Image (cartoon, rainbow, N blue to C red; front, side):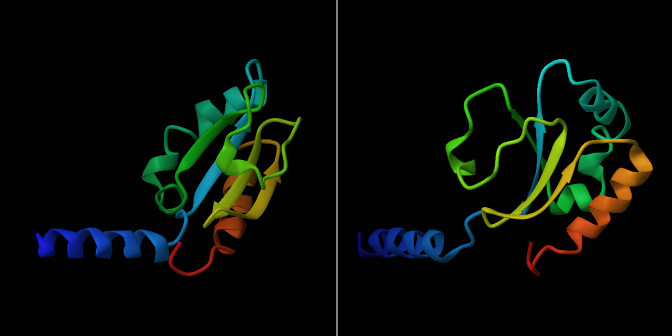
Length: 119
């Protein structure tokens, strides 16, 4: 029984001292957004397979829906798509708009370079 309690206590401590969240790339979007659709066609299928996508998985947030509680500290947008790079629950960088794959990959590379080590 003592081993079980020790394991539970250790798990609780580890959860408490672990980082809040790893890096993620928020995509703020809304229904009918033609630029979001273009991103979906050109980038979204490849994103999880790239080094950038592995480092910061894509998380979609529909701006017409209630704002997620865990994003209370993130400024809302009306312009979509907007990409917000997050690390440990904090905004690192923001890219408003999508004008094509070349510009996107260039800017995302700059943003990913701003991530703290370990994210």
